[in-house]
Length: 102
Image (tube, rainbow, N blue to C red; front, top):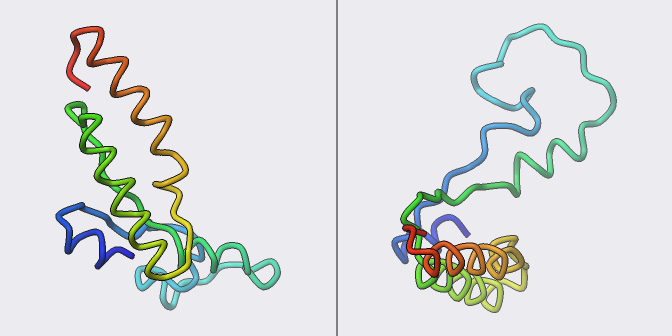
């Protein structure tokens, strides 16, 4: 999904977190592991973030949602960006209506 978003000029990055035992910075480190770290692996493999900034407009949020929806149709996987876009768009619209940059 990151490559798909970036090919459409939406910046996205992997989240530096999840299963830190797999992170290159921690290779060779001594630490205690409790269990199989299944949920941590999910975060490592499936979590990314999309940058936001104060001047994000409702149109930009709509573009992100539409692009995420297109990727969902392409892959069959739902995106959190699609689920949260209504909240983000409402916030951007409210700020714009108040005369403040969204």
